[in-house]
Length: 146
Image (cartoon, one colour):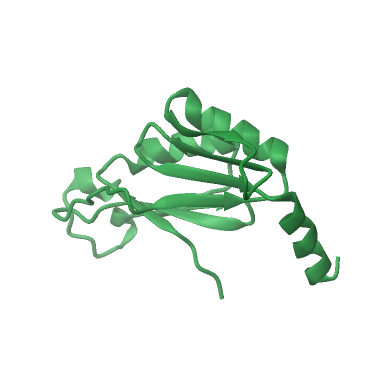
């Protein structure tokens, strides 16, 4: 079983998807549009809205979609995408790419609980937490038998 976070946007998911593909260097994204349903009775301009895009990211999937027509999404401060990885260089690079057109909330640096931690808000308002804990990365490998 897996849990995949899903972020819902208000009609600009295609733009968000293209941005994240560039930031994370992803090319193999599965995308389903609202209009892919053969019985869809949506207006033509709504058929290209994204029902679900699955981005393979850090060994998991981040799901993106446009809100259902007539039911806009409301953004709040109660949601962050949290990334933990043993690839410190990759995390730093991704953090910096998101920060280029976004806003750094907390610099990516050593903290009292983590070897490197930072928070960045991307240009679409999504906050990303990057948390590198070398000791946990080693423990995870030991526990998996690698």
